[in-house]
Amino acid sequence: MILAFFFAAPHSPGQERISSVYIIASKKNDTLYSGVTGDLPTRLTQHKEGLIEGFTMKYGVKTLVWFEVFREVDCVIQREKTMKKWPR
Image 1: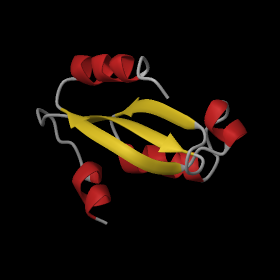
Image 2 (image 1 turned 135 degrees about the vertical axis):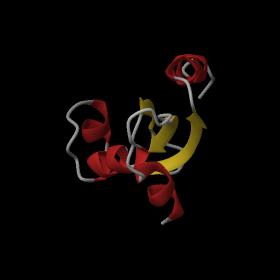
Image 3 (image 1 turned 180 degrees about the vertical axis):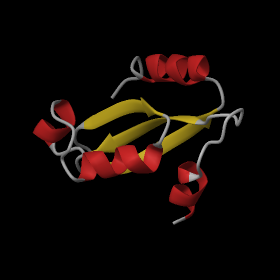
């Protein structure tokens, strides 16, 4: 899986860290969830296996529908805030 290879590469000291904002869904035209993470493959696995209590577990939100990569944490957080204002 290219996504896992790209994001799961180990971070060595001084290496730039990559963060992602993502949207996952329960099924087509249903519940959406947006989140921010520094390790997208691990985070998606946690969602799929029901390891994260709360909204995503309650509504069965597990399918990645979109993601975007950023080099600066401030940018990824701002992007998620902007997305949360989008109409559903």
